[in-house]
Image (cartoon, rainbow, N blue to C red; front, side, top):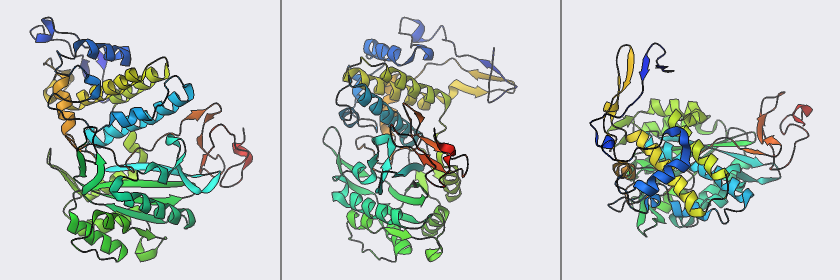
Length: 437
């Protein structure tokens, strides 16, 4: 018997196939988790039909022609040549981040999504995302999104934060409605929920908290008026909402922190921040406040989904894979994570001294995919899926030939961002030589 790390006084009884289930009567046995991504690709290639998937299972398109909230075609376009080792490593890191984002946005019930940007040490006019080739934040926003209004507002927010005092903030409103994007099948995408992008700068970093709400347009207009003093009319376009950004230096309008912005939004709709119509889960404003305090702790994902993403990274970094094989690796990872979220609740039950995983038929992956396709993220779900320009993940900056690129100064404790392939001679904040290699 194994010991359960969450319930140290309990005994763990592993899940074993029930001899009476169809899986013991000739149906394929799913590969053990320890065998990794390659084994799952082989399994889906051979047994897609038994699992209720299409033959092109790696398109993540259901039998009813729905897709999950991860646009595979765009992801694969990021990788021009899988034989280019540097490009492959960069793409793998980006895809790892986006898989984490998919889990957080589409498979969890979180409504706060943190993301971190850094001042470019070589160009003080740039605010970069090291996970995307150190591209400036403006370069990461599509011109197609809401007729360029998102890109324009991001540009204004960036310029303000790069020149304003520490702990200054900018707030961008993104209301529900048309996005300007289309799915792989050419269907127009609407955002079903309203988002607030709350950005705060401090030192070399700008932290962005994306907050999902179920505000309708009247609530969005009221929030904008409270934050900016600007009154939008009922027939204002979504672009007008996006471009009505709010900026605050510390203390202006009694705004000092991200929590003060949350309090302003709370006054617009005191009852709750968000209600998930799929499962009736209510997110209170107190829950939002606690999530913001957690910051990057939101990335402490459940152990098995972390393992699935890690398996993808190992597979991708092996090299010698075609683009189709790498797409299959992404699809297999999403199917594995989705299976963990939609596994029937009756498979796990806690007894006073024993943690049982009951022997019941698992959902087919076809059914799992259908459930995952119904999950709504920042741009909906079902037939309308994409990931908003600003809603991606923060996390480790990765490494280069010299090791970790982000580290804290042992003298002042502040974060340093080392340029790719270069060393630092002194701390970027206090000038200490203690960081020199």
